[in-house]
Image 1: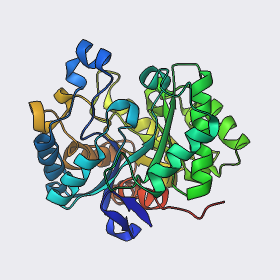
Image 2: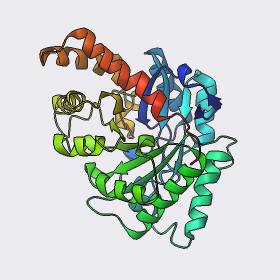
Image 3: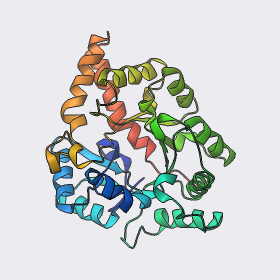
Image 4: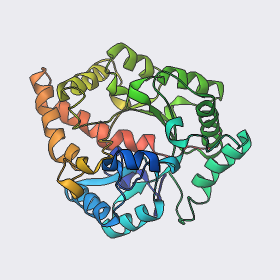
Length: 315
């Protein structure tokens, strides 16, 4: 069962699913003023973006904007109703840079209860429940409140069965997050890590994958960090090591200039309209059969998201 903004659905209905996207988000005011390109709060543009993705073959996506990054779950519901797209909303928090001192005065139980309400009752008076629980850490460090948020997310997950999503700043601190989750008794088969391919170290990626967690190869189209071939080679290395069943894909396009509906950027549709065929051709260039590469893509975009976002029994 997958929890979407329009209700719970069976995994088989998702179809092609991008596992880390943004349709409606606004960072804290101090950041929005400094970098207005990060403000993507136009509902009409969100409908256009989602419709273009659906027209390219998309069936579902996970919208990863958390409470401290200006999420708009009521707006996501309107986008889902307008386009027929299955949208999974985000519970929990992002990272300390965004939530600041927002949680300082909350007890550990209050933090857990807050996250639990978002996945079992509703988010922000929207009438919708979130289908994934997010937490995050900073670059090469975990603050005290970030650890408290991780533990609250873990406890809410164990009581609800809703999967977990960990933000790693520039691909750091995943193994440290894992130690906290293990201390909380989390089954890492229900955990997914974002941004790890910002640090495309094959040994590090394999260390994380060996825990059973999913790895979201996000940032696709952002070649300002490194050539797309670096990302593709990292993905293929994970597959060669036996972890093709744990790879997810996402654009993580959170800027107006990234999105098709604002400035004609690559948009959420880019992965399935452009990148997928390039991945197949690149895989062939690296010595694979085309059929094998196409099967890998089906894993990343269809089979793996069905398992990752599937709500498990409480434990």
